Length: 105
Image 1 (cartoon, rainbow, N blue to C red):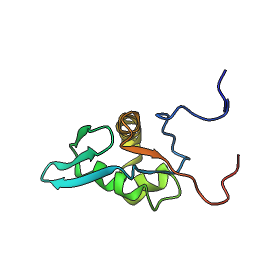
Image 2: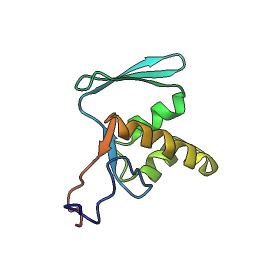
Image 3: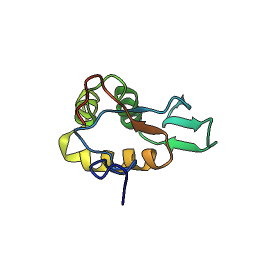
Image 4: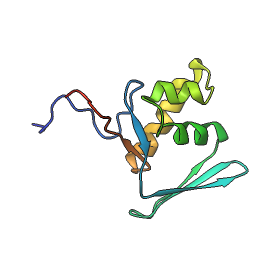
């Protein structure tokens, strides 16, 4: 039994949740997108699309993932693919859930 039965798994990125890049991650711009390096677990990830880099950067200021995708001008038909990419980033702690002020339990 989980301590928080209503909480999603750490890698369950949903459109209505706030996420942000992990504080232990640095992004280095590259012609293909960016390299993401996690200083804690020493993982290196290639973000192979500049649009994905834009989404990852937008997460910090967006109230939720859907807004970050919209800010990055990702067509809605492509959102499932981007969600899958974000879930992969969440599994390696490149991005993590962000707490917002006044978040309801």
